[in-house]
Image (cartoon, rainbow, N blue to C red):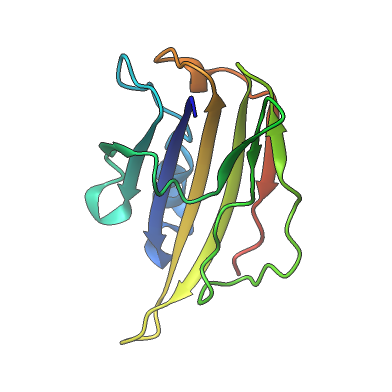
Length: 156
């Protein structure tokens, strides 16, 4: 299967929920340049409040992209990303799978609130999945996606 997934994960605490820290968090990108020559791979980008939201990148094989990808009748079927069973808000109803034609890409966003097991402090995560069906140019995800699914919810 010729697909590229870029999973961008931004994590923060209550410290970055308001004021200048929230402005800094909200300014982080949801898409990045891909490494040159990338094909059939997972490009992971992690940005954490504890690292001043500096991007940490790695490339892995496509075996665990965080969503199920299948080729069906010449299209790429993208099932909704996996959700954490311990995160809030609960997502009992999920959007349907998205089908992409060759050359199309999808951006799927989903956010969470977690409760720390030791101190009960809340922490948060935004995951953005940029998924391309076909060969990738490094700047492919810097444009406008053919499809977009927004599962972000209020995290109060």
